Image (cartoon, rainbow, N blue to C red; front, top):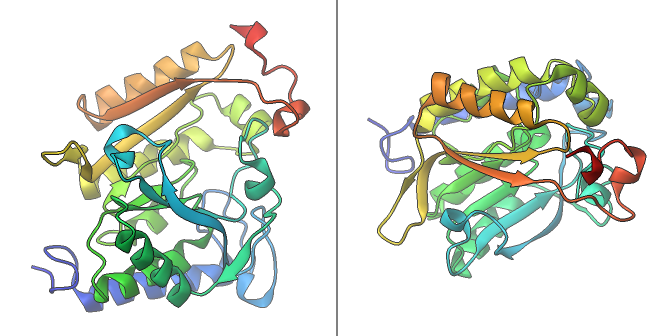
Length: 282
């Protein structure tokens, strides 16, 4: 039985221990599956190019997410600067790969952002590209919960996670929304700079589902808890998509909520570096 802050989940002392472990990871960073082993507290940078401070690009109601998240009032989206992936097809590449237009934020400031998003009527607080700053966000969520945050927290990540780090988010995240990109490891290396992507994605998906189960919605169709998987089908990689869906059905749950979307080539974006990823491959 948990305490009043967390309902039936881990108690406040347990959550503090989890967050302490996450914060310790900054010193020999293994927050994601790259396991760069750099000391971000002393300014060393890994592949995400961030120190131990979370940067935020923008935040506000967003209506482009899946219907159970966007609803009628929007998903309270918080776009974090940088990313632990380097996808050549990223639609948000200026923020994720260059952290342009971002501002460093403390956990206290991020907690205030979360509370403000709920006050605006957003159905949830949705952290986009959170993996590399998980300790800061975990601390922010605990602060916000203590001050009355009641909407679900969404972990909108790229799927290249460290399972043990995900484990320490138990009780802090209500909805996991991994954008699972690859079952093809060569493609993951070439197009997302992520060696060993599929193994990392599978292990983290299992842990996410263990924590929150299948996606559940309320009477209005709004997501309250669970796993929501997104997959972008890339040109020439239909079999990759099938392998991901088969894994979800066979090893996670046949009731997994999976939103399968198709690729649209960008003009002037990161995809200019990957001419092979064009609609001619379909």
